[in-house]
Length: 396
Image (tube, rainbow, N blue to C red; front, top):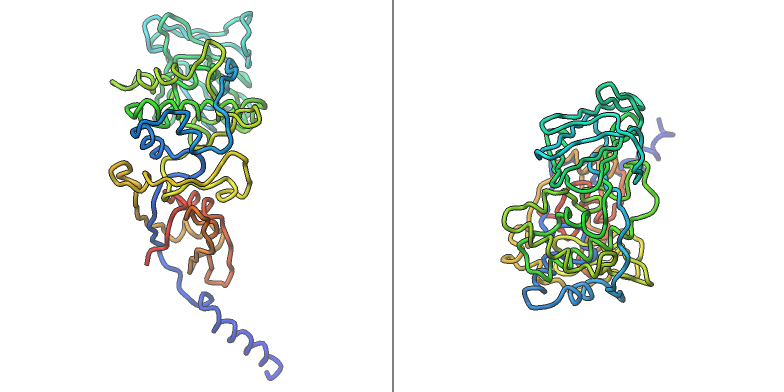
């Protein structure tokens, strides 16, 4: 027994200096904070405040993005937007009297010579299911289908997982990828795609809407090129890229026309529109709802520097009248979610290790009851545990 005494002494000493080894993991953790989103680029609440103060869209964008030019660029390209990811089944239905839905085998692109294999009139549904590496639509079996609709005011409805969204422009592709359906809408960047972007209230001041349009166009143009195999797309239709809701944005009661008009005001002619550029190329124009009082750079948030992001004051985000829901907030996160964020069996203590000059958490440390510790970036942590922003504090 004597030969084990040094080991026992070392173990007892380790336990005495690391309380987490024998501490009990709490059932939840509490946080307080400000802002909503990652905090990089243009603050939408800030843009609204600048617009209310009489500033132009160009002035707003030059405030939030560094060393950029806002100039006309060619935007006649087609963008491929994922509107349905890893689905097992969808239904497509023409919903206006003059609508006719036609389906073609394969992904036919812009071809005008392809022959349809099926057609559907109003109140008829085209149901498509995933089956292995193929998709099934009635008697049709294929790896991919292209769906078009025609008629003077033709609109198609896409239903999946209990949700239905209306589309008016472009065409839809459906592809079987890894046993599931990937559904994309191909349409013009110039106007059709932007008419469906739902990232800001259409009732906001005109300059704020125009700033949002230009930022969204710039982001989209920066994403053109190789189609990502995971989604069969250039961009997703959600916060992974930009929130695209199709025709539903354009027909919002009373204010839908205001958003569409803002898009039109940023068009120079039928082939060019305003975009934010750096070194002659459209930038990946990040934006977000609101901050904790100042914006942060991509290096601060994600560790990778970009020439056009900067940290600037954003006091409007802390104004409870302009930002009633997120000027300040509190949240409780359960143990399971926090532990899974760190990929540890449990978390006994959390410690904010560092913040950047904007006040956002750059690193947070989690300690498990077995003594293991891990560091996470603040934005990674807030995303995984679903906090509103990286501008947070640990509440007692």
